[in-house]
Length: 361
Image (tube, rainbow, N blue to C red; front, side, top):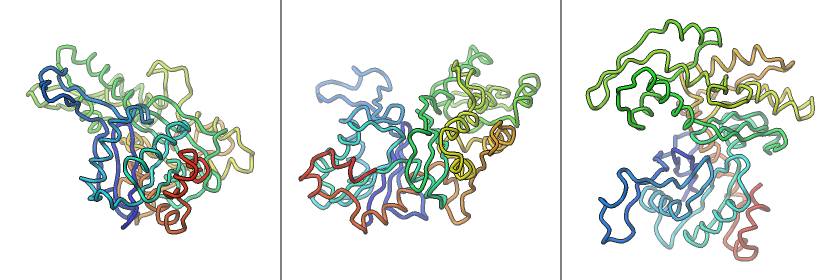
């Protein structure tokens, strides 16, 4: 049986057996609906639409909810049988705390009885998915943004940085802009998410963004309740905030300048190798016009070496940027489990959860 690869994000969990040339077989919301533990408690006593978030800003925060979610994924979704569990690979966000890695490996062996475990950082996997072992990744997830440098398959933490902004913050900004334009329209969070996914885009450059603020064609959209709204300049705020973080209330450089500054901390001979193999990943990176804007900003960069984007090979599944870490995980799973580089049950029983730091690095 193939190993299972799990890439659990703040918004979506991607899971499936390790088949690199296919997309993950399960892509489901990470957020779960809350149900009463006591059957005598009625659903009516819970707040309307009560939910629980197993993962917050990229890291597991509710372990009971995470166990329930993984149980559904592995046994119901992927068909594992109790007593006959297989091997599993997890993707690690940048700067995952040691305690979280230890608790995850402990849960896998003690609660799920897996036969083998491996964890590896998402940045390495996203590069593997595009046929690289060195380069930079700019990963814009729902709850965080990671800029990571990778040399010969190892993350260089001194030149990598995690930012606690992501698609969630862009959604909130989009909601603010829409409510300014439509103060009397009741917009639910799900309405705003759908509108963002359909309409959000990037202006060609900062001057083009200023122009759309003055004059932007509008499109009509009918909400589920029948209300009609017009969407115009609001859609451009989502992408612009990544290049002008002041729009999110942050005193920070734009995304390209942040990348250049991270890489500036490594040796000069490695800077070219890193910047010229830059990979964009995460849901927000696939927004209309983002790649073109990123390349334009890169061409204007003050750096002597300009960031250059790596294109996905034609044989890779469409939209690979959305799940490049999962795809890289499917590739590396073929290697680590066949060559016994993973954490085995015997390793875990002998050393305990800390074995994850020795065997998964």
